[in-house]
Image (cartoon, rainbow, N blue to C red; front, side):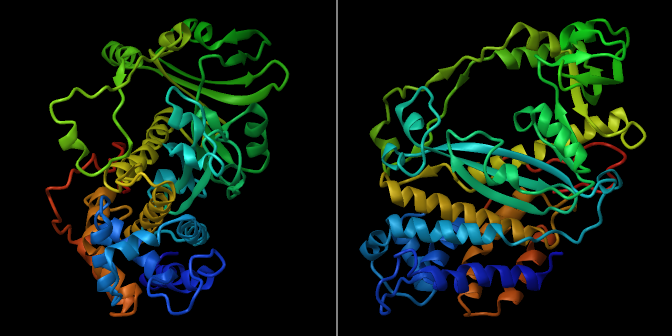
Length: 466
């Protein structure tokens, strides 16, 4: 379980002990007299970008100065390269191994399972020079097609534990690698989208004693108790009521026993869903944000790619319903409770929103490939540390959203840097940070704030969760 001492020890171990241990193995340090050694560089980048996700070299130099290391801006710039990326990647992998969770009370609905896990990933486009290390996933732009990075995270909604982030090549499938192979405890509920499942994997989870919940796909083939085959659209059109909760089988050969849950939405909601499904979207610029770029492009029209969604006819017909598949028995989970847990999956989407909008995970100022890669690793590590600190008191209190917690830790980043460096007692500063979050103190209001982690409106969830 998480406590102030455990969070303090984890931060000290990753950013000081482990950084010193691997600085020579990664080639980052080659002589003992270097000023920007592994621990100093790691703390400078992690806490520097936690404090200001758009920090420049001079601003990072000021962070190093607060750690009693006086170097020039040029010296900071020269420390970025392939060895610095290797150093931060190894530290990120070390942080992934730390298992921390909240001690807060678990809501009754979530407490029925041995953990309620949501998992998802995101793609970050990288410069084409990194294609040998991180191969791309294709796409309409040359940059995304040649090199990209897939990042996956798994959250336990009951106690706030985080697994990951796991890193994969952009072209790798979601259900592959460490993110897919990481074990789940018996009796848990795995709440993910259909991209993480095949029928064989659904059966394997059930045989291992794990429950799962996922949205049904438009091409799902159903077999009723009489052995009659249905496509999902035809089956729902044959239903007279607004709510469906039946036991069926999936697949002609597999014949996997599942529970189909479907609830008809209002006509207004269906109309909004169809409008959203067919609406074209304007792509926003990501990646390299060179200094003064906005000033150079002032008065010029920026070319932004418009993406037109193509939604199949069957999918459009199914938008009248909210449709779920699960192996949780009816006496353990009602229809309304299943719909609540399905909405809980939105928490992982909000996690990415916080990491990208506040943490600027997919935005950087430089055009140098390994400087970019180092920054991504450092920001991911900073996001993990932020999550550790929020677990102490802020995971389940309704008035303490993770956005607010992220802002407070961002505000406290320079002080945490001094604590990790040993200038002040680390546990004292972590405790002070947690008390700042608990009191809901106001931080820099000028920074753009995305939507907070929202509470799920259901009587079974007596206490909200971050």
